[in-house]
Length: 72
Image 1 (cartoon, rainbow, N blue to C red):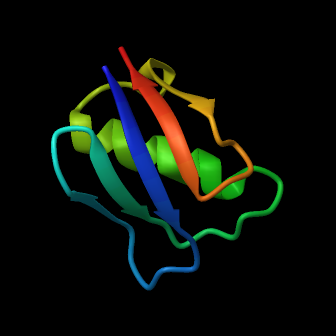
Image 2 (image 1 turned 180 degrees about the horizontal axis):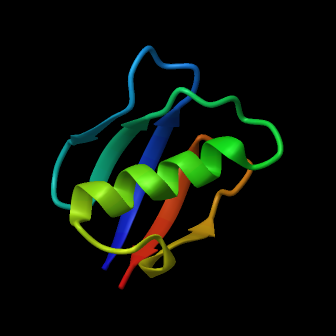
């Protein structure tokens, strides 16, 4: 399954908000430096979908707020 994610960094708390079937907003507390925010997004989505982190992959948008993510 592929989803589109808009990320928000430096949030007060971590959250995943479903907008529709393929669009989500993920808020994370980490800074967008050294891949920490991307790692937090992967962790948050793995928890939300009840899967392992290894099943969540950023397909495109690694350095952007808008990401395409594949969940297997």
